[in-house]
Length: 357
Ligand code: PMP
Image 1 (cartoon, rainbow, N blue to C red):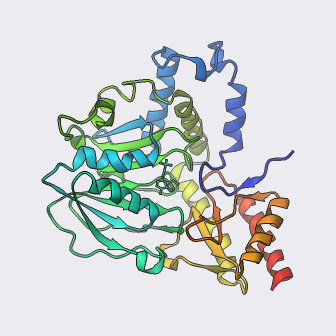
Image 2 (image 1 turned 90 degrees about the vertical axis):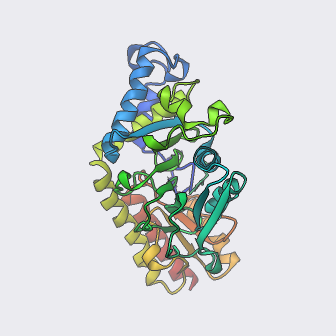
């Protein structure tokens, strides 16, 4: 059986080269006589893997020395709790912008910890845009945003203006476009879209934000614990970090973040240009806020949507079903999706339109 073009929102397609290298190294990693899965996280061989992975992420994202890079577990969802536990003490306030289900989940966790302001929401129009925020209060500990909204296909193209630390959930667009990390207090992402397999979460945190947690904070939930031990306080998700390392090396070979960004723009515009001129398919996200990672679109009836999914799958184009909250269709086109996959999808959509208009 041939490999398919996999448009899954996450876990998502990985570069084929990376999977092949992992397969080659599976039984005997670089002459160690064992798989990376089997080695001690305290061994010199593994130490090199985790250090190199961090170094390569620092290079690709231009992460300065005053930021720590942590490899944690618990997904982006644990960050919804860790952020307020570490930064929002009882008498302080945090602010959030609500751009969808993931922001809402982050807000819910913050509300359990301290005073949580919701400065803006795009809920009124089914989260189809990024809301403007004016007058961000001065006395907040941080402002939390979701840089790319996986379900609705929206993304931030400019950041809100504030002196407070911006905390960003970048799960679905980390490394897809250049970002100036200096503009963020914390930048976090689950790995399973642009970075590797599920099971490791990348947390990039400005060092002055580490160590602010209350004394009774459980050890594993304090950023300090992981920062002081370079993510080796306990056993890290060793194999996943190794896989992230392979993906980062692949990304370097592609020319780095700027090069992949140009390719991502090209891929997104191939689909959006078709959708904008279609007489059958419609879109939802406001053009100015469109995601270049998740393209959300619709057909006029449930019946046609089902037919589309069935026929697409027969053509090797899979996982195009929209999120259950909004229905319709969604093509997730993360870094590892080649331009050819997107072209094949659009060819299929053209044919489908002709046959079903
Ligand atoms: N934030 C965003 C933007 C996401 O897309 C997702 C997962 N799809 C999450 C958070 C939750 O991530 P996890 O499953 O790693 O907790």
